[in-house]
Structures are given as structure tokens and as C-alpha cells.
Length: 155
Image (tube, rainbow, N blue to C red):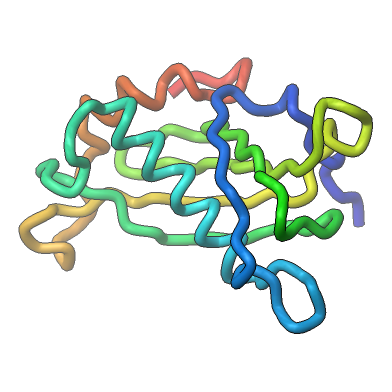
């Protein structure tokens, strides 16, 4: 079974930074797995809110998480900041697939390869009735995400 190569900073298009907290680490000094997912979710939604220039929670269609996963390569944790790189792997009619790289350390060798990488899928649903079938990704979101498409990808 072949695995995808370990991602590097060059694999991502846009960046955010988060600060780790004392409570993020467990009793063994490892960052809790749930915190990785919180960072991934926050990176995606903070970027959307800023890039769209509107409260994304009030759009006619909203993204709900359909899938999330994480590959871990090395430990990260308190007390250092985490760089979060985002790229869009797929921008479909009603869904978006993101990859979010988590990096800790400067631009030296250890900081060039991802410590972890998350896969995050949003499926868009009607904001007034989330049980309704999926709806198209709103134009304002599509416009904000097109520049994040993985090089060589089209929507």
C-alpha cells in the first residue's frame, strides 16, 4: 500500500496562524486529537468568513461537515504557534474538499514538512432546512474558494 508523500509548505495556497494553549495538551504532553480537528475547522471557516466578507452563517446555503480526517506525522503542542495552510482539492457543485496542513516550527527543515494534515469536506445544504437536499455552493463562497484550488485543478 503506497501512502501519499508528506505534505510541505509549498502544497498550500493560503495561511492562517493559531496559538496553542496549555489545555490543548493531554496528561502525556501530546496535543489532544480533538484540538487538531478544532484547528482545521477554525482555519476553514475563518478563511471563508474573511474571504466572503459576510457572515457565512446567514447565506442561503451553508456548509456542514460531511467528512473530516487527519494524518499525523509528528507531535505539535503547547507553547508554540501553529501555521495552518489551506488548499482546495475539489470544488464541486454542492461540496468542497479542503486539505489543511498543520506546521509548527520556523522555515527550517523541521518546519517545512507538515506535522499533520487534515481532510475536511463541506456539503452545502439549505440554511432554512438543513434536512433538504444539498444545494449549490453559494457564488460568494465559490468566488472565495476558486483561488485556493490546488495548482492544476479547476472547479
